[in-house]
Length: 248
Image 1 (tube, rainbow, N blue to C red):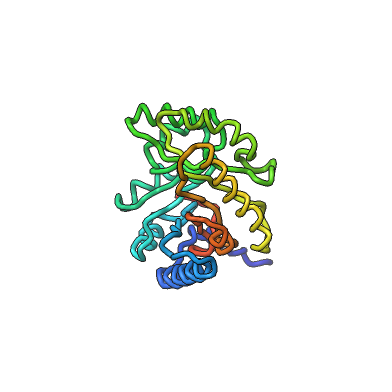
Image 2 (tube, rainbow, N blue to C red):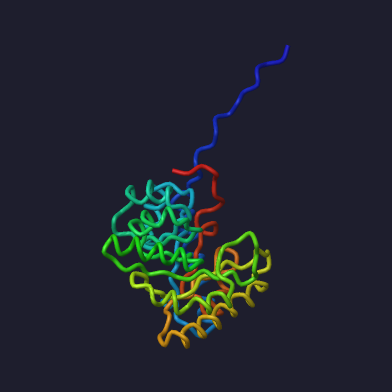
């Protein structure tokens, strides 16, 4: 007769111990500084965003206690549940694919939407921002490799719609964002980061004013992105460790 099999309880949502979080953050800051030194930039020209998808509010609080102020969320519903449980002093950007029916909530939850990938989405954001009595800072997401699995403008489509985007009264275009094809070799992302920097310069020329932000670079390639001009790096795994599937 076999003994009853012992079934372990499900693992809790992963949470980095504060000591490990502090060590991870210090290493990331050192890597940012080194990348800036290599490219003749100052570390304060790069903003580190902590990507908190699936992370608990307590983990966000631990990161905030270490000095992080900017956080990124991929899903509006998760953000709506999490943000009210965190300090009101924190800043939040939306970095995932935004559906039109979530624009009203996104306008209320976030100070910036980084993933505007179509004129119709920009129009809905502008409409909802107008209803909220605010102007919404946005970044235009660019799909440089034309990957079918990813959202974002193709460069030529973005340039073709730039005047229409600029005409929207309640959005403020502040730059571009991209997610290059996944690769274990950070150097293979460099051409995409360089192309986004060049596209930003072309957009600036057409718009007649500067765009302050290039959001590019994540845990595996942010140093290369910084060397190519990134002003916002979106780091999750390198800071918090592997994500669990459960959310708040």
